[in-house]
Length: 356
Ligand SMILES: Nc1nc2c(ncn2[C@@H]2O[C@H](COP(=O)(O)OP(=O)(O)OP(=O)(O)O)[C@@H](O)[C@H]2O)c(=O)[nH]1
Ligand SMILES: [Mg+2]
Image (tube, rainbow, N blue to C red; front, top):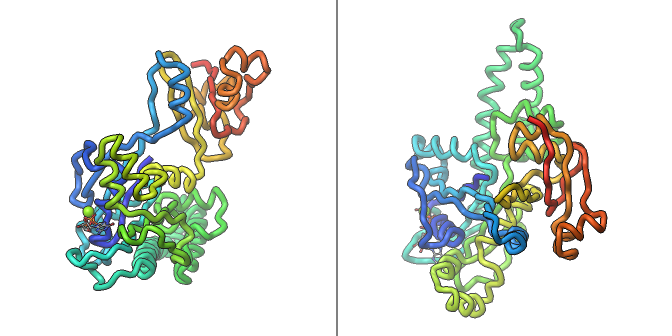
């Protein structure tokens, strides 16, 4: 999974990055000027920890998330074109976008717009991303309008694409996100290649000052989940030794570190479920969208597994926890043999049977 932090200059993207990754953790070397920071995070998972305690001799592989800080998207892409073009291209590849907005004041770091106003900043960012989608849609519409007049092999498909893009344009013209359109799966597939920004899952992080920890942010112009935390404090927290960290957390009333909150919110926004496999010497966790089948789950691990799918054996991690052993799970009839249509549940432990 790939996530990017974006926001106006000096809104605290790096600070939030440090708060999630840890100020001393190893980073990768960015390959573009548009990427200021990049790191791979291991997703904390209590259920995986439980399984590891259960099978201590096995290797345990947590889920990994790639986090980037992208710069140069705001202010307007047209002002800093070269850098922002790369940043926008990278942004299109992301599974989820984290919009960082600034609420902290700091006289030594002036806000590029001259004043602190998280409501305005979020609105401006959303507006700019929407405008970008509108430009991409219009460019393609112009081409398609010409193409559909000619009897080409793709004429029918072009017509369908044009029809959907005109719907997208109409929504965008009214200031509505493409994600609000009731598109069918087939229609969604036809415009998937555009990777529209207003169709992407989003989260908003309000970077508050140390003196604003209780402040609430209602009526922000977004349907996305909103998290508020003080990036600076949270990043200091991760730099401490374990004992000091507990004291610091209590003193600042931080119940859960920002990184954990952010990752949980990402999984929720993407509507993912996690399932676990215990194969050979390795315990692993995998994620697929909620409502997907055992066949999709098998395909997530390996395409051969999906192609040769025979059946799957499923138990829930909760049953394993309460009954204490796989043998007891079996004795109580809680190990189910399921077909490829089975809808995977969060916390399933699955063994796939397949032929190659
Ligand atoms: N007081 C206070 N200062 C903060 C907070 N978050 C960030 N800052 C300061 O604001 C300045 C800019 O923060 P950065 O995290 O570098 O912001 P950025 O968005 O990464 O900046 P660019 O990458 O240059 O666009 C730094 O001096 C931070 O120390 C905060 O929560 N409180
Ligand atoms: Mg930065």
